[in-house]
Image 1: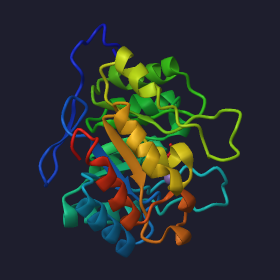
Image 2 (image 1 turned 90 degrees about the vertical axis):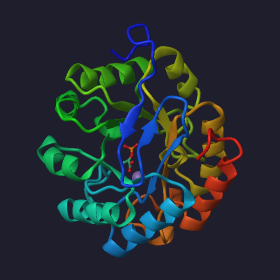
Image 3 (image 1 turned 180 degrees about the horizontal axis):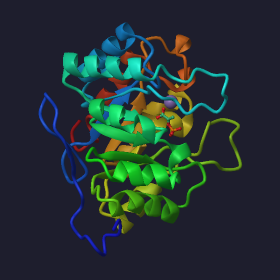
Image 4 (image 1 turned 30 degrees about the vertical axis):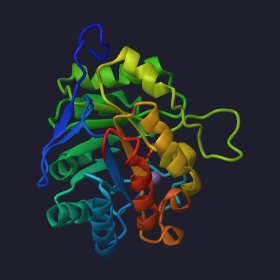
Length: 269
Ligand code: PEP
Ligand code: MN
């Protein structure tokens, strides 16, 4: 069960990496997952991996299968992108988190990924939740656009009930009435609310949560101050040329500055 009533100790999701174990949840340092929205080429994923590692991230994010709102937009490079993620892991020792949209790709994804991501659009894809629950890699479960906290926790329970205890919740912004100045409304109070309800770790994605790179620094600090167990941040070597989510991607230099700004307030990054 996701409730702390049934499980008073907080769940710590442990991810072994070549650079040592990364713990998500509990009282240790916050976990930082950073990288491009989509894996676009070998050069860009390797460069991004090296730069985010140097800035202090422990986990590389990058989409191979992309859930795009429009079918005419870039859909991700699929299997070749998985190979590039494996190469980036071999080169840097960073753990990998990448999204699964279709259970037929799950085996190939779980071979490369240290953490399997369920995106906002699939949070209530119960067949997919059961499938990721039946495999051993930890699962990052993003909040759906309009999911209540209880719906989100019940989605997590699908994974737990299928046998996988390693679920990380990720607040990534929800739909509210005003989307004039931000892509979504980042619901930071979800962090302490979840802390009162569940033993599962909770992280925050200020990139999708705001949709704009200029707000990522402040919202990262706010997320740390309110008790997040980690951050997921989009970083691209040249955001103006990104094939997806360019306006919210930080440059490697900007990411380095965000990490430096967090150092005085984070549990240690
Ligand atoms: C992503 O992480 O690139 C992504 C598509 O996120 P979300 O599912 O939160 O929109
Ligand atoms: Mn994205």
